[in-house]
Picture 1 (cartoon, rainbow, N blue to C red):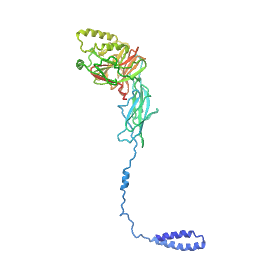
Picture 2 (picture 1 turned 90 degrees about the vertical axis):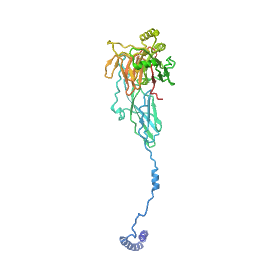
Picture 3 (picture 1 turned 135 degrees about the vertical axis):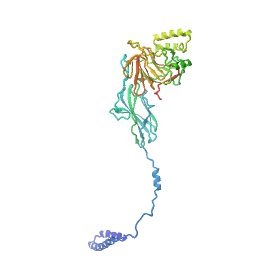
Picture 4 (picture 1 turned 45 degrees about the horizontal axis):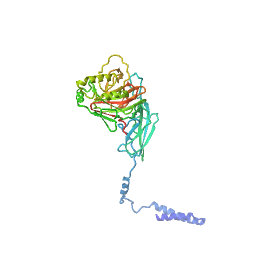
Length: 438
């Protein structure tokens, strides 16, 4: 091999020769050596067979370095918390990342108006809100439709987060979704959630602690959003035998909100404990408040003595003539058979007793579409929405679970200020604005 390498060097030097005679003489000699070298290589054999069997490659350090490498992983789609998400005074959306998700630094909320639901009808007709006609591709897990998505706020965070949007319309349905952003990129969108706003602008109020309510029976929470009622022993024994005594007059302790409605349409949500004995929810005209709170002490005993029975019956007849009955009276459920014209009442409340909802006497629309005038008992929803239209003079009660549906709508006297009203008999508990998690 060394001879061949020397021959190659000699050939390079010969090629640099400028004298033709000297080049010919050198090239002739070089040619002879090249022919000899070619013949030698044809019979060349290495002295030993090359082998790497005796060598061992150490890659332990390299494996250690590779095993310690950490790769960024893109975050998984966020999971919406359907129990906390609400549309009360705006969209309040809660979500979190799955446990095995990659890290995230921020989230983006997007929402889309997909339609409206019916929130009113003529004054003399029964109300039954139809389910919103949402396209099939607008449900949870739907494909993107032709409507435009609106980008909400960009929320900083790495795990659970919440975002709010206030620019929403009442009596509407919105689709919401969330996307996560991390060091390794963005996630896919979360599943879309259909959420419904209240039928009117939310009325923010608290329970009035200066309204003259019975402080011996009713107990207000510190934030004045929750009221609890203690059941006297006489009432507990009587209602244990007959939870809804027909034709029996029992004292109801009333309390009102601290805000008077004088115009416009407003709504608020009430959460009633299903184990409550008797709870009444509705509205009352300001002119009837003195009758309520002035007679509460006269009717405070569930078993009046014979000496005060006449005075009590006189008070009962007087209050029934003026349309204000501050006690629980279960309707018989039998219709007189004559067509009655609904008149505006100074106070209108629905009754909730032992997990059942009793609508006030009047025209109602059942699920099958039939119309009747009798009192109807329905299952108690998890949350109840009250909507008052002061300008039109009516109040409606809605089921706030899932797609909004109207239980009933009644005329109410709105000639003056109207207050949110609540009544309790026996043990019970209710809370206003339960969807306001702030």
